[in-house]
Length: 225
Image (tube, rainbow, N blue to C red; front, side, top):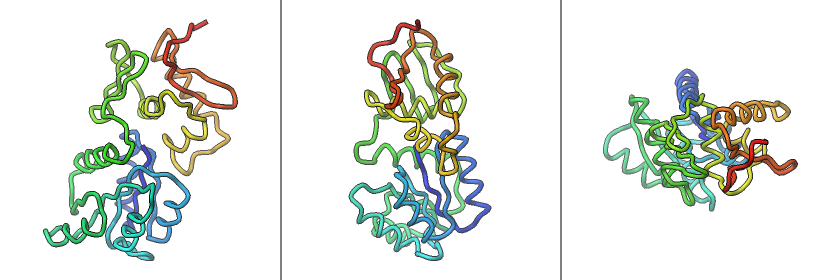
């Protein structure tokens, strides 16, 4: 899942980004509305955590701009104005959810994941393929009933591959979905993480590679040889 945090309070933005990355999300940060609009034009996001009082382009205006797009990101409006009238006006602008500051971080995480599931063509809550089951909300993954002890990035990588099944994802696709805008496109991070994930999934191997195309979860497990 890829999230854009649009928040002008830099300390809060940094805390949110770090916390969401710890939850396995790929997170980019914008500190004003102009920067947020530019990143929305460049990158496909599942959810934007949008401060309503952004400078540059006001959060209200940016929210209206987002709702006019055909393939739009889900909007979680984050603001200090939490009165019922403020929530109503925010939702009337096209926001999909509204959370007042201060808030509990676990609630923010659950709301983001709920919005991602509501996004058009969003994946099911529990992902299943080739004997693997992954629940992004409970942060649990199993293969043939065996618990998988995965790192944050391994879990996110497996989630991305399961979400795309039976399609392929290139290394560039995986960098975009699992890491963030600062990931080096020339790095071997994807290859290394895929290798670790394969070892933890065990045999027979289910993550297949097609040179020049990418990776996918195979419908039928491969012979490890």
